[in-house]
Image (cartoon, rainbow, N blue to C red; front, side, top):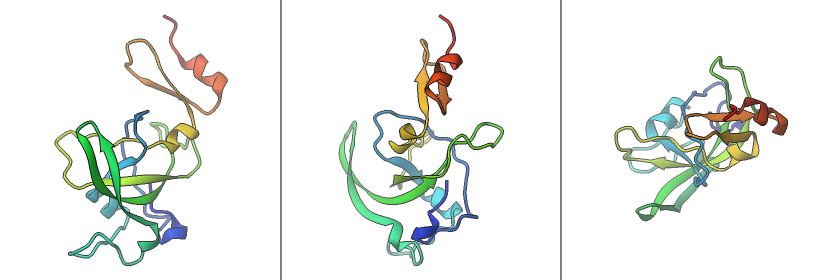
Length: 145
């Protein structure tokens, strides 16, 4: 994941973050520390960075299981990689919200654009996520039950 160059980011500053594919998630979840690792600089009093202000979407409403909250949103650029680090997708943009106070063991959610890049499936028991670049590939990956 990185901040998009056309919006003031740097292609050379990217991080690999574990993310949960959540079909109910319409925005990716990030933590402030994730942004710092990508070169995002904020002033002490505000969330607005100097060089990345074009990618800031502002405070947006997010519906959660506990009701609606407002979170700062920005645009990130992502790609899915295999465990060995090779890319499964090209770079794609995603709307991300910043969780300022994540609870211990809080999971980063994927957002919705991941689901436009790959075919995704789970098998009975839901013990793993299967991903493929082609529709026929997903059926070959699923276990026989």
